[in-house]
Image: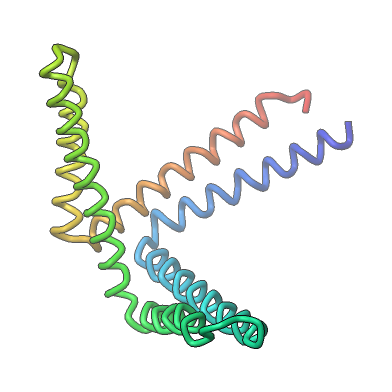
Length: 175
């Protein structure tokens, strides 16, 4: 029984954390973008340093040490770039999302066309392709605003999820 009470406490804490993060994402989306950018930059720096240290530690047992050092050096350069030029990296992430959305749109158009020729239901597939296409166009048009909107939608989701977890914990009083 003691374990179940501890589980309930962790659930309440988890729900409060989700609600807090949701409010933060909804209220300060640009700060979350910058924080995300810094996290990516620091991870790239750490991976680059780790790659270089790993290569140096095995340099006597491998051939072409400089080729093995190159990925680490590139990761460090990218990490510094991402941390220093946060707007450019957020823009690049937006462009990558747009390219991915375009590829999904054209895939849905292709599948919808095949389904139409086979006499199967195809309208919903084409509509999903159209949604992906419109999203990609907006992402290319203004990546910053779209990423901010995605962060805010994520914040709403976290708030709702936290509330639902809290409600379910309080609803089941036998825990």
